Length: 594
Image (cartoon, rainbow, N blue to C red):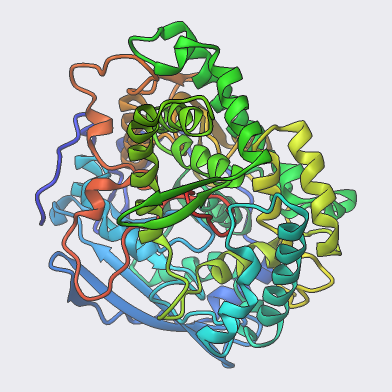
């Protein structure tokens, strides 16, 4: 087992399952048994007639085990075509007192479940690692599972993607190119990407997870899902409500907003989910706290931080900044890059430093009256950020299907407006409602326009999302989340009758790992089923412009959305680094770091 930073937040609690056998509720501390809704006969028939796979585990990555399995491409045709699914598990350290398996999903859609499971020793609490085999599944089309490919070659993919190489389009020419590429990608995924692109819905992944739950020997599912993983968790809870042992979702999306029924099918997903509202709220709060903190703690406090940010935005809208660097060469910083980098900073608990630092640097670099010496000093931070972003770009060899994995799920799960050509007006309207971020979040789904994304999954799930589960669902919502608006957690908790909302004032995307309160509460629920009191609000260990606590235990560990320590885990071959926990986000621009 690799060395890792120890958690002080996890609770040491007895489990309720030993050797796969249920312990009576009185012994387990779960309280009275709950009468749950039942899995529908149609769903039960789909998954239960699939023979339990035999997982041929083998040692991998020094301390894990890997396996692959063939599962039905279409559960209505269990003896028909199959798709290969990859799994990875890190076995419980205390096998004698092992509770069962904890399935984890990092979000995306398109995030690698095997990667986040491999990183488990770097972000999960000690007691969870002691008592659970941590299992990650790469969803259909993703990572080590059989990959979706919407184009026959990297050359054809590169041509189709040509207009997407911005955080979001701002000029008319960029909008035109973005719409053209959105249509090209949609057509590729609806033709060359078939049949897998039409079988990647969240419902299919939930069915896969239920079969694999059986394969690892668990009678009911224990699950921890972040960001889009909250959609997967809610789908499972509502499709298989009587098969839930413990289910936690953190960074929560409203499932009804995700799908979009009735009149909502003709508005963008962002209009329904309002991710930009959450991002703008977080940005304004940081700038307001900056002013209150003063110049000693926040450089922007020398003036009006809100006005300074807006001034940089206005200058970059009028004229992009061109920078010459001896190592990177010449590169351009656009308004979209500025907003994209801001969002990237908001994803992490320490992101306020990036937001303030970049704004201060660009305030100087875009000022014609600034001295050469001041500009030289300010340029260093921008160059460093640009270099990091350039390293992240991987649009050349080998074939990178990251965008296609996101679209294969989102465009299939949700309803979207018909014409990609309507996105410029829709994005502009969103930007007026939620400044800076409205365009960014809206443009991410333009390839999903129904006229060009024509591949469908007839067995997708569209609700209802109000089933009573056999065990509670713990819903974790973060006030300052820039991707999954806190209101999504509120809505999801109201839908699920057997759920409990845990709120937090943590910073960044998702809360587990940035708050000792959240982390300990989640761990306690996973192990013994103990729920927090109604109305509980946790405090994030990291707060903008506030000195760190003496022992910020939860933030010493790597959080899934910013897993620095996890990225240092032993890797072999071309294994990808742990992906960020993300809600839908379009292709990144020059400075967009997430």
